[in-house]
Image 1: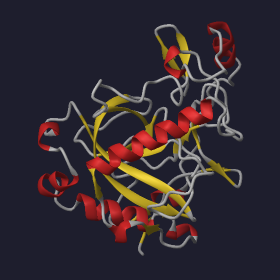
Image 2: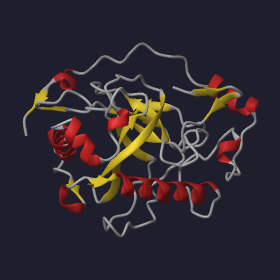
Image 3: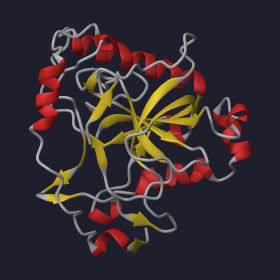
Image 4: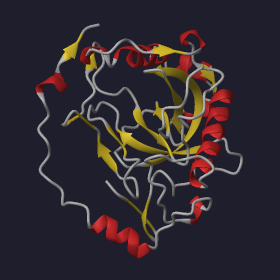
Length: 270
């Protein structure tokens, strides 16, 4: 899935502005995985214009396993544009380096979103997941257009108005890799969610790390920094509209949907 703006193709990683308001209390979110779905879709960091693709492991497209009593993802799941968890930076709060990805976000509102949607969300809290020895922050957020958005300002409000969701989120992230033979994930802060203030702080930090990558102050490794818009003004890898259109045109045509493997619909008990 490629993204197009008013002036042609754009990168959802680099061209969509992170902040959605001048006060920097609301941010944009790119939805990669709608709630209740299982296909593991994500922004492709290595490809120019960073399309959303299904992740592949050992030659097979990936689906997340459903660990009882949950089916697929519990939230509209996606990424915050213009953020990057630098693998060369060890976070003093977690003691682990970044996971080399944009910042992950779980949007907990009532609306079932669609893949590729760009939502305006308010950060509410933060979960410090340690995934295979790497810092993998999970930002908890609410769509600002949600009917109860005004009631949710911090993580304590989530517990009040959505009882059980924090516990379910922690359980989901702890166990989702176990059916494939992985170990339960660990968490910073003694498995406690932290407040909106820390979420905003981590978002700002990872935005600075993204800017350092785009300006080549930090080696981007295999990440494509190609972009088309002024929102990524710190980058040197700007594409012309024609170059960007040529990348999209060169993409292979859509193939028939890959059949859902039986394992993707199986319930697992941990």
